[in-house]
Length: 317
Image (cartoon, rainbow, N blue to C red; front, side, top):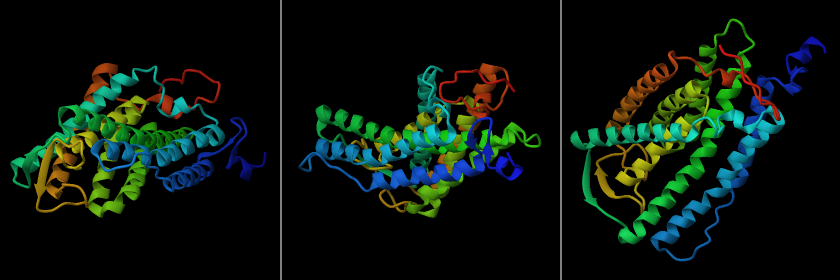
């Protein structure tokens, strides 16, 4: 094969190289996400809390399926890799990582709100349990389902697909250490998060990008999505329960003089405190990685693709 073509096509792996397939994958994923966002079904009539919660859950399903489906197609057709190679190998203690990540996420959200309340930037104006003890748990389950339905495909795309491809793409470049490649992947994923979240305001976009650094580090240290999914879910669901993101499942009513994003009770002081807590969480993850593995390293499996039908163990660093 001529040299110019070798720069674009990997004959051994029978697929295009990362600079070609990653933009094509982006286009495919955004195409399917756009198609999904054009549908917003609401199967239940009426405006009762349970009906509203279920309608909200179902309405996001087409876009979530679009994002997830786009990632799966890009992985199978463009990357020729197994979908489990994007951090969805549920046999690797995935649920333990999900639980640990959720605890970190809850801690980050709780720290931000606590600083806001203690500093007088946020006021607890009341407590509520919509529908009483019989209905409220159903609303919480529906809210949790909504969060998972949306954020799992999002993490699969931004962390699993983007970071994995970037780290793998740099693996054949001797002058670029794997840690530097992972750093590039985390930064690019954070930029994607900023772009996709800045529609709610610049500060909200910057906060999302800051959280994305934490989520990306969680992914590159472990090689699976359980920790970033858990952190993401812990933050989002905690914000629902404590009233930062007021919904029928919220247990606390908050008020604040200002907010960085419409429909949220999120003053800038809470944002700053939450980002400080996220920085502490990075240290916790690094400490945990060192204490369990004996050293801190980028998970080698991210750099070596597992092609469809292949189950080889990647070489260690």
